[in-house]
Amino acid sequence: MAGSKDDNMIQQIRNKLGFDMASYNTINEEDAHERDDIPNPFDKLSLEELLYLRENNYHI
Image 1: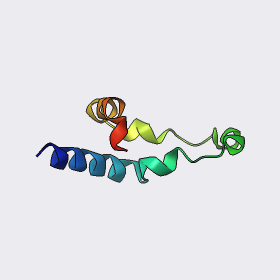
Image 2 (image 1 turned 90 degrees about the vertical axis):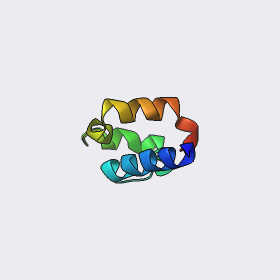
Image 3 (image 1 turned 120 degrees about the vertical axis):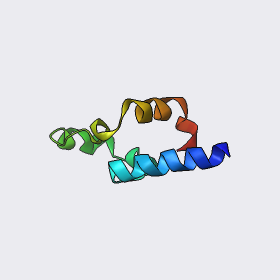
Image 4 (image 1 turned 30 degrees about the vertical axis):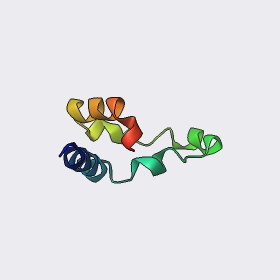
């Protein structure tokens, strides 16, 4: 039952962000300075979703 809740939360987060969390960490560090002008996609998430990501980062 808990797996379903986790799956729902992860899917909700993916839908709001517009990308898979695993792909977010693949940004080349050399290119990071070129992307400073884009808005933070995590601003779209609620506090509950942000706390979920912090506490359950192993699901991603």
